[in-house]
Amino acid sequence: MKEFMKNNKVTYNLISFTGFKSMLLFECLLKGPKTYEEIKEYFANNPYLHETITIDTLRVYINSLERFGCEIVRGKKSEGSKYKLLKHPFELKLSDEETKSLIKVFKTICKSIELEDLLALTKFFKKIANYIENEKLKQNLLNISPLKNINQDILKTLILACRKNEEITILYNSPSSSTKNIDILTEKLALSNNKLYLYGKSPQYPNTASFLVSRIKDVPTIKLQRTITTQDEEFIIGCEIYDKNIPLLENEKIIAEDADKMTIEITSSNKFLTRQRILYLGSDCKVLYPQSFKDDIYSILKKMKEEYIAEKI
Image 1 (tube, rainbow, N blue to C red):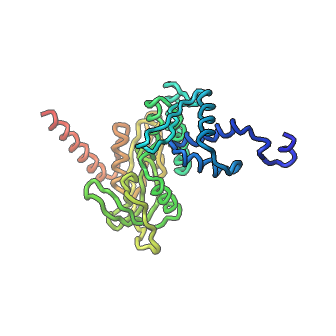
Image 2: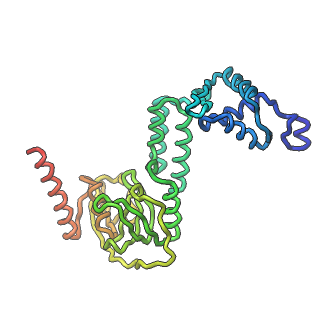
Image 3: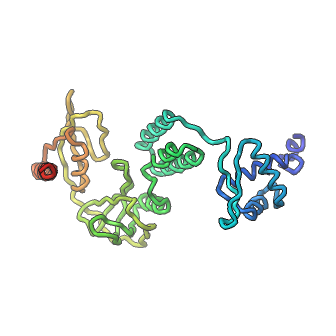
């Protein structure tokens, strides 16, 4: 301790070698199965050691870990003779109730945080899941995030592109027209129904378009020059909302309100997204104007009803 207080450095004199190397071996095997050569390299790269270990001393450290309750086995020669940490007493244990509470908190938080924070939170939950033995609880934590099936390199590129309002080319797996390249002038990334969408302008679509990020198959290409104009005609939809607890979007504003309902106006340049919003609100929403949009929604609902009736026949 005196030496450390004087020099503020960790030296050989301050290290319990058996304890330190046992912990180092535990850290190494926690990352995954390792061969003896890989363990030697791991020890050699440690800033406090810079030395390898013999097979005999490796057994000493394995014995030390086993006394603490670890179970370590050596795999078959045909599989590379790798040392594997099967279990250890330091696993994170969560009850079903604790897991449900954790998931509930996550779902509440992810509605209001920035996408970069949601990405960091997704990584955090993935890290927690790695330390949980119960497979069901582990899968619950791994599947909790709406970003779970999205390539992180793709996501990071999209975040930067939207921040700078850049024009990009994506390789998109469209459910109606298979995989194709699409040019987009990026606007924003946003969650809808627990799925992440990229919004932007594209010459292949008449209005602001949305693309499911999980369908983007490769890291987007950033275009050096803009070729897409941003002129779009906006329209206003008037609606009555009967559940006053429904959170409004950025393009929605209250123009009248009483005890039972509120009247809002939706300003948009994308009829598809506006239709989706109205249908999502269901019986809690009634379109007031314009008549053309009321007719459009009525036609969609009528067609849906006919499809369900046809299934019963």
